[in-house]
Image (cartoon, rainbow, N blue to C red):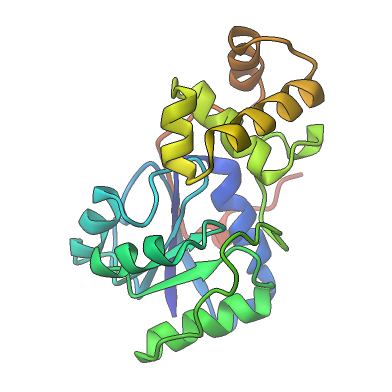
Length: 217
């Protein structure tokens, strides 16, 4: 099963690839696409929604129309049933929770590859991430705090943040306050500067056959 991983943050796609490393006999990670669509045919494109548009977006629709992308699977911790339905209407073959352990994620991807429909995500608001990675994790940011900070660094307002993440305005403000405390800033401008200095800048990169690269010394 040939898989491409898609997100705008290098650390996110590398984190998912590392999470699946023990399953190389079942999953071949063909590409890590940062801000890009796959460049060669794959069976499944796993679209990670970290700090990205959600499954109801035009980006997912366009990806599902790409003949190189194979079956598009949205990978998210936003489990609103309406969002899942919208992603399916946009052409996604499945919608998987980021709370899945690696083995269950692989089993779900195999089901999609066979043409079966994996069991849907449970619970509207589960946000526990078992594997993967995100910017700011080493500094103590939770995945939600990191996503909110990434969207602030992209220039989104609180209202736009709420719309993108499906959080209430009050929840957005709570995450912003906790994020500021963790990184030691008191205002939005300093938060953006901190974010840009700590890997929160979206990029465009393609790593083909990432498992074939020489190991770092």
